[in-house]
Image (cartoon, rainbow, N blue to C red):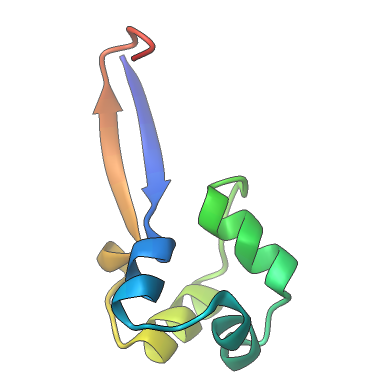
Length: 75
């Protein structure tokens, strides 16, 4: 069985009708780092960055990330 954290930041951006560029500017991170976060290609995120994203998007951390269990079957 596999477990993973799925980043759903792109969904929240769409709900808030906000572009990545605007969020990156509000949070104070580069667009490249935000893109890596959106794609799930990061190993971690600082709590202050997560808090800033939640503040900018008026959401909770659970709106941005989710935990999934897989059966290991690869599909």
